[in-house]
Length: 218
Image 1 (cartoon, helix red, strand yellow):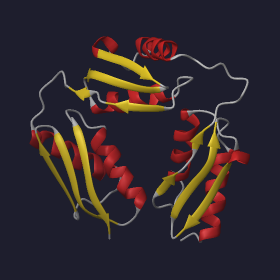
Image 2: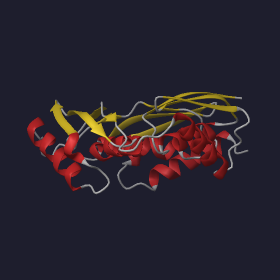
Image 3: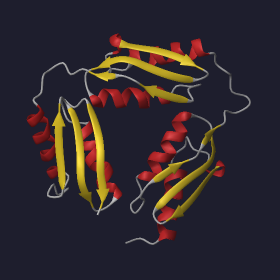
Image 4: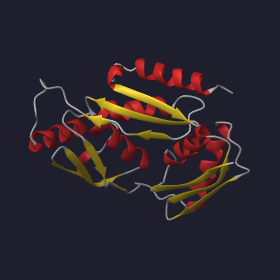
């Protein structure tokens, strides 16, 4: 198992590999497998990317993201109307999203998404896509998931368990409960990578409307 210094170096290397992140402005601290990111980035997309990069490193547990967004002085300050229009345009051009039932509003750079999408995967995709729009400082994702096809709860649970088996995660200590499309994950996993992998598998299963992750580390 990698030591703290090796894990820290790997996190820093991951941050350096992403062109959206100004490494000189981001500070990394590692205590007992928990990474804390502090400093500034130039966009919400960079803030999200930094957290994803840190979380992807083997040996990292939780990631505490204390980064602040600080736009360059020379960057044009967009009005909320322009930000909302840019978000609508981005969603309308995205082939992975049916934006007809999505409503967008913006206030002081905080974008709120309301309406519905057909899958939890689409909901997550919308939030991430909007975070990359210039001027957005936060995304409040209130989209409801309304599947176009009806999936029985037991079918959803079976597909999640099959998905976990395909990625070599033992389901012996994991319980998957589904009620009206809402998935609750409970039980024990050996490390944080498994924690996030199980959650990801559930979110990307057909018919899922929401995921409650109650997994704990063994």
